[in-house]
Length: 181
Ligand SMILES: [Ca+2]
Ligand SMILES: [Ca+2]
Ligand SMILES: [Ca+2]
Image 1 (tube, rainbow, N blue to C red):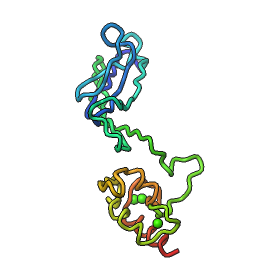
Image 2: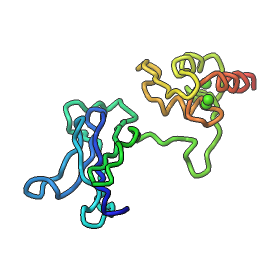
Image 3: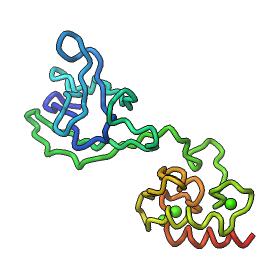
Image 4: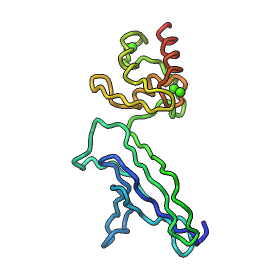
C-alpha cells in the first residue's frame, strides 16, 4: 500500500465480551483493546504504508457480560484512511467467531440431515427446532428457545440443506424430503 495511505481499523459495534487486542502498543506496553464503538487502531506503518499491525480477536470469558450459552460472537468494523490519499471509510464488515464447528466448513462435510434431536430419524420430533431456526433467505437463523437451541450454528448444521448459511423455504423442502425417508 502506498505511503499516502494511513489505514485505521475502527470498531463499529462488537458483542459484549468480544474484543480486538493489539499487544504491546498501549500505554506502558500494555495491550490496546478495541471493544467500544469508535475504538480504533492504526494498521499501517505511516512511513511505508505497509500494513504491519496484527489484531488478535478475543472472547473474554472473564468479562461480566460474557454469556457462556452464546455460540457466535460478532464484531463489526470499518477501515478508515487518515492519510493524504483521503479515501472514504470502508463499508462496515462483520467478523463472526464461534466455538461450535460448522458442518459445511468441515474438511469432508457431511450433508445436513434435519435430525436435530439426533434421534436417528428426521421426523415431527425435529419440527419445533426447524420452526425455531427458520429465518428466511439470506438471514442468519436467530433461535431463541433455550429448551431447543439459541445457537444459529446448530440450526445451520441440522437444517441448512443447501449449505448457503440460511434456513429458508428451500431448506424446508429439504427437510420435508429428509422426513419422508
Ligand atoms: Ca430426529
Ligand atoms: Ca437460501
Ligand atoms: Ca439454506
